[in-house]
Amino acid sequence: MDSRRAGVVTLLVLLGGLAGCGAVVEQAESLTGGDEHPFAGETVTVAVEGTDRERALVADGLAYWDHNASEYAGFDVEFQVLAPGATPETGTDVHLRFVETVGACGDTEFPAGCAPRIDASTGVDRPAAVEVRRGLADESTRLVVRHEVGHLLGLDHTDRPRDVMAHERDLATLSQPNATERANPWNDSTLTVALGGAGEVRDRYRAELDYALEYVREGGDGAVPADVSVRVVESETADITVSRVSADDCTAGEGSCLFLEGTDPDQDGAIERYTSAEIRLVGLDTDAASWHIAFQLVDTFHTGDDPDRLDDADTRERRGAWHG
Ligand SMILES: [Zn+2]
Image 1 (cartoon, rainbow, N blue to C red):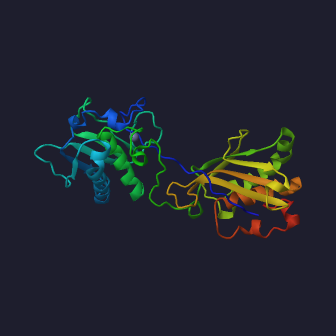
Image 2 (cartoon, rainbow, N blue to C red):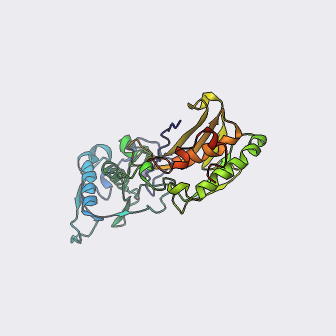
Image 3 (cartoon, rainbow, N blue to C red):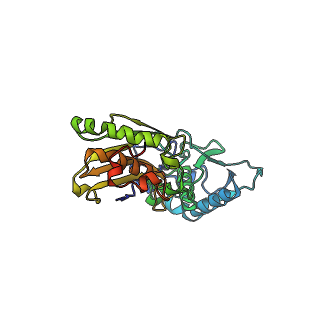
């Protein structure tokens, strides 16, 4: 009766603040005179504003360029991560800060990091400021560091190595509770519900929907958190849609099916937050709709035993005033 579908994965995007969009030249040609890059041949000092763990991940990410800068940027460079509070006599070359949200960075909607693109013509205003989003999984943090430091070395999104400099990458966050482990697995506490289908069908089911939502508003016998509110809207972009479907579109044969979509930011294969749900009714007389809508809607909030009024109701009770 209840089938679930794993859904969309959120995409975090990487972007360097000054990355040009027009250049499609290969880096060997675009970096003629690469040894004039302000960091060429230097030991570049990096102050990290973050935890010890984050500092270690930065060191990992930078080590990549110790080995690969000459191939991809055209010059040698060595990075040195400074101890917390240390200020070298020669000054700090790069200031890398871990932040909850990366500030505006070009026109990217959800940047995971931001850094200026530095080359021989831009010069560098030391320390160059880099931001990296906090809370990513270790490998994703290393990747963001490698990418942003690639910008510091003059590379843009069309440059090699593609797997590091690509503009968009799937990134994973640190492990998060799955939707089934959350009291409210939805993104916010205000849910909108719409009836699908033509006007005539909507009119027929409207009273059933209202009766089901009454039960949800009263807390669904404790299964729905008190701060959750539900309201009916006409929009097709509602969080939850209820529609009548043919038997092919629901495995229940006669009854109802629940389809859930959501995001999986930690990429563990399970949804962490629901973004939409579809309650499909099949082969039911109208009187039974409210019980099925309530059952499926309440089911998005809990994984344990169903409330008695949902669990125990027999066929006849489901068609009456089942929640009083
Ligand atoms: Zn970038």
